Length: 455
Image 1: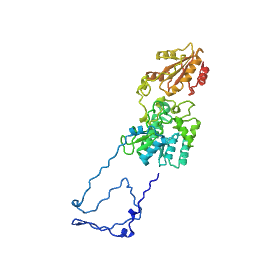
Image 2: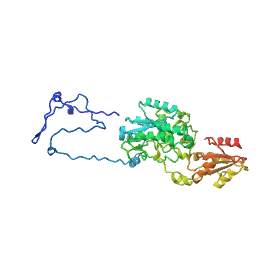
Image 3: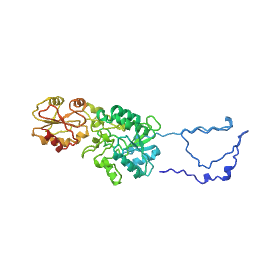
Image 4: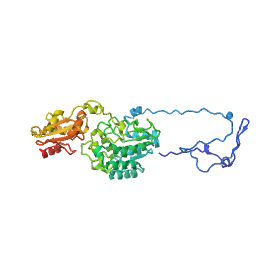
């Protein structure tokens, strides 16, 4: 929305003669202020001062005794209660929330665009009719399709995306010391910190608010309490210090399926990777397609634990996970009901799984899932695994489960090849070392094919 500066005719009706005349100085008491010729430039006056402009010096020789100084008025700045505002907007539509954000912050707010389904944010901003800014983090490792999508979006909306890049010296140091794919060995956090978090921090230092595509249903156990608006708990804004940046999440309460319904209804361009099975899209080495029924975050950092599938951009919105490590609670700190409850399924204790792993000549082969009941990926395969147990009942193959979170996690990682939840192992009849199921397909037929190939 363009801002127009207009002046009324009555306030500007100054004759040309008055511009060239000399302005006479007024009399103040017994002192006379020397008259000074005032010339006017034909250029338009600007009401905007440069940031570093110095105040104009006064050449008046009027003594202080003859000067009346008006008391300064201190402007009262109202502090917005964003917790209250979040409650008021909890039932508002994404369009209403977007409009409110743009109205409040104008040019000091920008949309963070990743090149995925968060293009919905740009469409909502476009629908408000207000001006808006968009920025994106170019990590240098994005898919070619994502770069092409950026260009499509710019042309479709007639905008220029403000790209942020990582520091070349930091990237060079990381790659030279650890190689191009170190994240497969020691986790993605260091690479994300260099290529994403620090560039984001620089971008946000020039803003007072930002808009993200976070949704509560996006990540298991980490984003389910995202508010529609909040004071950013991690990053700083233009004014610096805690509380200097506001974070808006217009689609926080929207389901992923509803976002896609909106994109289709509005004929919004989307990243071509979505048609190839990609849902959550990030850097090329750390993103892959998912299978029908799999959670979208399973396509990100698939070699890591489910609770670690965050890059650090939204660290302040992640739930505390203290209860998760004791093996008795989910990331919310509340009790979680156990899963895999078929009567044909054996629950293994720590001594039980240790004995099974030590045996070199077993009477029967076993298939065992290493799981955590709070993990959405484990919950997603519960029905198929229970069906598998019922199907294999009396077949000579035992089906078991071992809860491998909490105190058991370190042992499972060291001795049972646990990488992320769920991990499925097949213990052959005449071999001590278990064989890890390599696929993400966890339907009954795929699991049966794996078993039949080995028993």
